[in-house]
Length: 360
Image 1 (cartoon, rainbow, N blue to C red):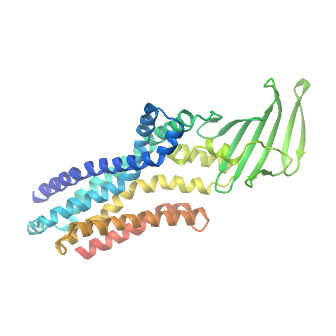
Image 2 (image 1 turned 135 degrees about the vertical axis):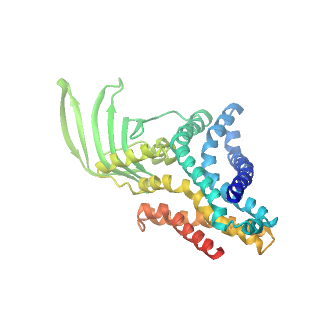
Image 3 (image 1 turned 60 degrees about the horizontal axis):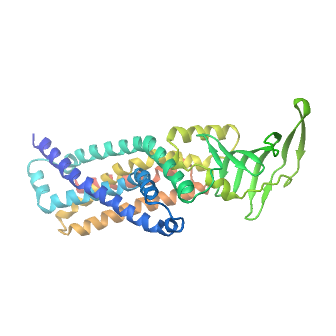
């Protein structure tokens, strides 16, 4: 019976902290993002209604990004306050161990992690596509030249329509480029297939290509083009702008894109990292809770709650540093994608378990 009462009390304390902390983090995020974009908004004379729409559609992505930090802060502040009031000592007197104290908080944050995963799969991709569209088309007034599906990139260029399997911005490379060239009356003239094109900052360097010219009577004439014979008027930035980022794709969409590219023999390592991150990052809330609970328990020895919160938030910052480092190594080919995506979770989960054992 005491354990149930304690569990309900701890959950109430945690939720009472988590909601306002999450809202305050989102508010700070909005303010910082607004002032970072203010110059561009003024330069483009963006209407207030468009600015409001942009930030409303961006809030779901903000929620995803700040939730782990909000969870850690809520755990540290709620348990720190309880410890400072000597209530942890009272729980121990009732026979409630630190492990039993942790169970309800771990259960709640596990639910938050699962909810984050579902949120990222449904709401975030839809809203991310909308705020990008508002930014690029309605605010910056760029012409819509990209015709996007979940698995392909279509671009309306000066030579006709381009179909691209992958835009690798990091390597300044296009993979699987097919150009459907049209004449002035928009009648098809030829189809050019370019396996790879690399941008050097001023021009494209293309691999040997195949051109199929359409002639009268529905016949085609095929010829091979040498290196750099294909001229592409657009720049790399033109194609990067129309490619959907990982935030705009759900897990299932991204997995399907990887399968499609893999069948064509295109390197999918970058997409694999993003795919595994979509599973790993939502569980950061649970992992940071495992570490935060024993850290908050140290208030019994040190009455300075702010000091413990500082240590805990530093540990949370360390989580993101490890995650960024591991993914940089993976993008450089030094680590497999699954290892890189889950490395921070594994490391900090082990640290949290060690702290728990030390507290017990």
